Image (cartoon, rainbow, N blue to C red; front, side, top):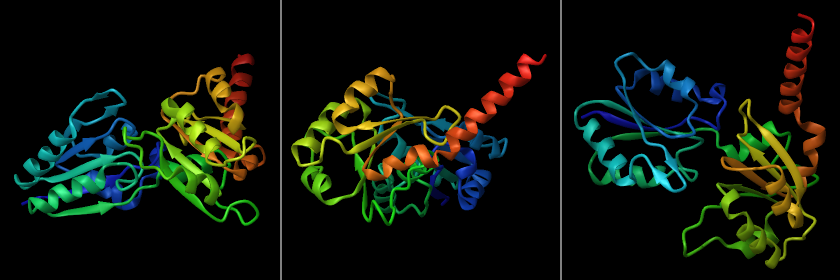
Length: 260
């Protein structure tokens, strides 16, 4: 019997993988990896590794979840070291809990290797601390891609939580905005839309809750993006270290080209 490792690959920047996660990749016989996993991480795998793409788009899944589950068991029972490589953290909107339960039911040994989730990393790279002594003593991770029978407790989130990090929510932004406003969130609450957080393509747009739909449309914000709601968003312009660094790199390159 082999073993399955449910590994968090982090939020996009390949350098944010954990040491343990990287060791799992290096020792893997089989890797089933998701769409948002940085492909640079796969270069650390051994030459003989079998790579299986298991990515999911909103309306298209390369592999159904049932197939992924079956593959994990199949390869482990062949004595393989199997890595299920997920963007972010396996247990934060990553179906890691479902996969772990499936393995338990079939007697397959496994380990969970946590990863840095985008709900913390994307705001950090945008200069937005999810907690701050002056502005936020509580924060919540929220799915923005709800099932038809929405069980999100919007009233509690709107009235009781200082900072919201909403995953996979751009396509449902009108619904999310309506739920927050109708449940008591002030229309002037700051909002940040962070597209491709922690990567070279990162783009952060800030606005207020009342204006978020028009701003998202004007700025052409699409998934993958993190939606951050709360007063801490106002710190973005002061603390935006990563995008300032990227802008500096671009200006340096442009200056070099102009001198040729």
